[in-house]
Amino acid sequence: MKDKTNKFYITTPIYYVNDKPHIGHAYTTIVADVLARFYRSQIGEDNVYFLTGTDEHGAKVAEAAAKEGLDPQAFTDKVSQSFKDAWVNLDIKYDRFIRTTDKQHKEIVTNILNQLKDKGVLYEGDYSGLYCIGCEKFILESELVDGKCPDHNKEPEKLFEKNWFFKLSEFLPKIKQAIESGDLVIYPETRKNEVLGLIKQGVADISISRSAKSVSWGIDLPWDDSQKTYVWIDALSNYITALGYPDGENFKKFWPADVQLMALDILKFHTLLWPAILMALDLPLPKLYIHGHFTLDGKKMSKSLGNVISPNDLVEKYGSEVAKYLILSQFSFGSESDIKVEEFPNKYNADLVNGLGNLVNRVTNMIEQYLDGQIDKSLFKNETIGDEEIKQLKFKEALSTIWLIIQNTNGMIEKEKPWELAKTPAAKEELRVILETLAAHLYKIALSLEPFMPKMSKEIIRILTEDKIKKPEQPLFPRLQ
Image (cartoon, rainbow, N blue to C red; front, side, top):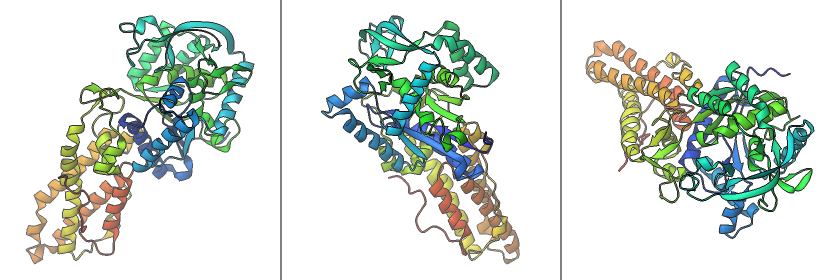
């Protein structure tokens, strides 16, 4: 067994291609990008693996493709590329973008299905129930509102099928024990308690296949081509198929995942079905991190309301780094979150134009003017702030800590008034000490921002480490008109 103490494997959920990327997808991916960048700086590029991708099978995808007059593969090619493009625009640096239509993925899923059957955790049975195509799952009558799925406002279909089932109920005691012992980490605590509550209520065995007559777009069951693999079994497996399970070097090096990110609406599948599959395969369990639902200005985001925000629009207005900052600094990870887009311009001007940007301008301008651009660079230390908060996924809090230093450094300028000292030749050494201290603070701020704003961090460090420090010719953060 390889030493796994010096590695970091992080995943986003793979995003369903029935629609284009929105700010909810962007949030999860930005969080993963920040963590991956942070750990690369701590343990090295080769010891971090960041996985994202798209989930491309199922009835919902086939339906969306038909509406556009495309065959499912052409449709998934198109939408999957829109996710890749969005992550390029946001400067997301992933190691692998997996698609469930990838040949390797489908082959390994087939292997996993055969293993589960050989281990006796699958059985054939009859199923009747209410199925919501929008959710890609069977739902209980008690979950309906006015006879409709509350998430999609549509009446579910009544289905009667012969399917293959996974013995999920048999794994519930083991999953409960794993959660309570810490072998299965679920964060935050409220979500962990929610999962324990679900186990206490009891969870039925889950169908792992659908009739090929009702779902034509998916992976065939290897022993029964009249059945297609249920989209969730296919999708969840991506976290190990991407690493080349069972014999791939990446799998041996990086599994189990150190952080698996997801939104609240897919909690049940990730905290019950996924651990049960891993237990059946005799694999170690990952750490699961769940963030809450997003609303937009107090309303649930939906296409019908026309309030779905594209990350591309934010990048076009603010640039990739500012867009990431505005999203991460507005609310804490794990909580139910209301995105207030109308507050973004004021926050941009306050935090970035008047805060960080102004600090860079003032410090570099005074060094250029009063010290001819020359300071002692040995005062710059490779120290950062906010590290512990990042490790705990407290991104808003980490940024607040950094911005407090920015505020205090700007405050130091007002208190010390270097421009007054510059008028007195006898105060030259005192002036130098103050300006070098300010530059050292700014260097630490820039290093600390690297996981969040890598390009801006690099630019500030470049300015401070030039042979002769000069005020930037153009402001780092132009004021919004």
